[in-house]
Picture 1 (cartoon, rainbow, N blue to C red):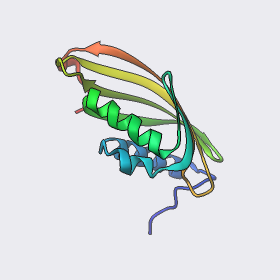
Picture 2: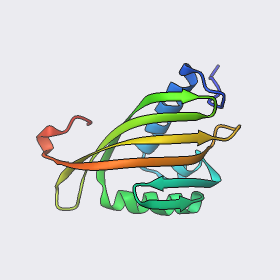
Picture 3: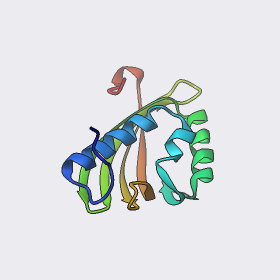
Picture 4: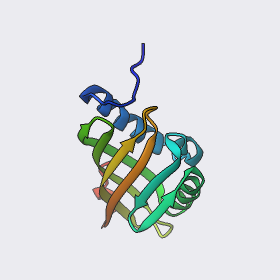
Length: 136
């Protein structure tokens, strides 16, 4: 029997929700990922503001045209009722072959069905060499 990943979150369900998000994002499938969000989901990703699944799909499609060989690791930071905070890092390379590690924090808010209705992400990028990669 699988556990339901809906609010109010326990430590177990919050950790499972974070792992499910990591797994989904590592597919790099914008359509699949968008189904974890409400149809009118509100996002801030760096300096980009998005509303709704169609904008999420468009944004993620563009992201992975630029961020090649993307690999993500998420970690639960805190949770309460219908909110989860995570820290994450991901690695990717650009078309010239330059590798980056992107660090950040996200604040998530969910509806009663477990769909994310708000996602606020702050992200910084650091150039790394290929031999400095940690996530493979």
